[in-house]
Image 1 (cartoon, rainbow, N blue to C red):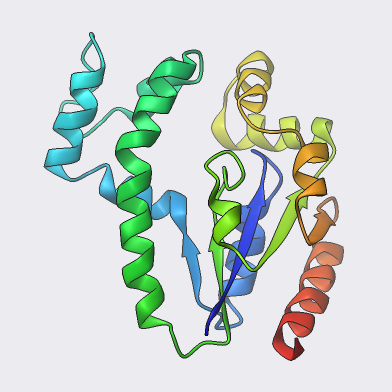
Image 2 (image 1 turned 180 degrees about the horizontal axis):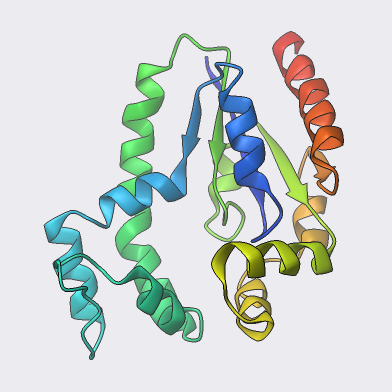
Length: 195
């Protein structure tokens, strides 16, 4: 039976960089956010999401304006919950199909930003949490997304704290210097291979 290893971390922790590193080793990795984006570009889903909002949340090409949606839902927990209720079940179904294709692997990695918030941790055999000091996270996000510090702090408040996540995780990696992080990940992967 293929083990499901959850990989998670708050915004700016560097979990995507870690995910790419793991993928480079030939380990099957499921990036839930990427799959959610693909699902959100399907016409039926676009229509369903647009119905949630009173204002237009579509770009000129008919696709969803994810930046606009993000700005709205991050300040509105009810709309965020509704959005998740549309997208998450579809991602879950997609993951089950994907897992079937990798059933010969001893383990796969499932990368989910909001693993604990959605209860996805209950479906994992082990969980790797990537963390980083708050100031470093903020600096990384400001560089990457070109958004204000206040906007980042608002988004962080929508996610569980690293302390809460750490208590529920099997492995916790503090990602400050990437070369050290990769060494830690190698140790974890070796452990998973033999356990």
